[in-house]
Image (cartoon, rainbow, N blue to C red):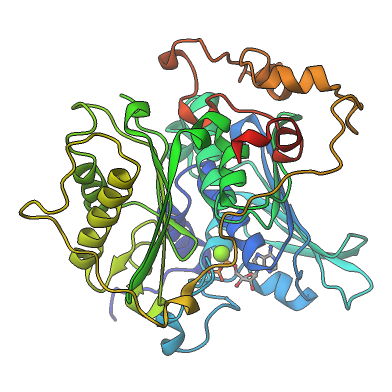
Length: 437
Ligand SMILES: Nc1ncnc2c1ncn2[C@@H]1O[C@H](COP(=O)(O)OP(=O)(O)O)[C@@H](O)[C@H]1O
Ligand SMILES: [Mg+2]
């Protein structure tokens, strides 16, 4: 008799979880991405103890049928692809059907979900031993995932979790990476009962970035916008004089998905050569839009690596358009586009419009704004005006949560750039500080 055994599902899911669920922020990423994939327009993330005790994501998306609510925890159960051809046409965040099975293998999960056409919601509880209990319950349309006791059965993982501050910072990073690309969706993030972010729908990417990272980040950038046959490159580049020693606000997205690329980072840094001193990194928010057939996101279970059909073409394009944009904005007189070695911008494609997203930055202002009225949340004009001044900003949202900061504190003492000079959501900021537009 042979020695081979096919592992039971619970064990193979635990093994897969090793890659998919590295820390609490991985769970946040997977659940928030699922919510957006389910067409939610409102996504609330509730965290207790940096995710050790509770990670809950509530959405108003399409919900699931009672049968799907059970099936979604099976490995390779997905509604997002069906055929091998679909693999090269991915427009959703998910497609591997692995995340929920992996999460349920290393935590206790309760799901409540309801579709618009169903009268009642279904509740599915997956206990520690993998046993499933279902019940009919009342709940609004959408899905509500609560993940408790993460890594209860993988003590090594639990032990390697870092401090709550560090784990929560990872959560904010993952939350940011999804929220930044979807200004058309409202998001909130609550930690230990305190609202860390309340992001109303934003008018454009720029407003969403401002809501997430602060008005100073947005006022220190120039627009990047280039279209070629292969790819559209849009986004924002930090002014060279605002480049920092610490990294933090460097983002690449392709078709709305955050990805890492040391190679493309090099292209951007090369374009800044001569404009910034050694050892500093500019902020950048670069959104690539391309035909999904030309990229492969199925490189790693977490999908933060993306393979492009021709990396070197994108490298050159990035270098050229960043360099050109910086030159156009006359940062440093030293840029000479006729010099040897300069890269020509590829020619524009007449088809490029097809890839244009619908969230291009737009200008807006609130014509009904009355500076002397009290805001609906009870905050007076003078309170809001104070937000632009620095010190009081974070105490509005972060008091007591451990994230209090002032613009003048030493960066090394706090949570890094993600929290830098963060201000109130755009609805309020806009009315008072229209000049940021
Ligand atoms: N928030 C949600 N709303 C509706 N359906 C969901 C939600 N989360 C997950 N699902 C369903 O469960 C399936 C499995 O989810 P997941 O394990 O994350 O795999 P994937 O996202 O790769 O398909 C999804 O394909 C989707 O059909
Ligand atoms: Mg998923």
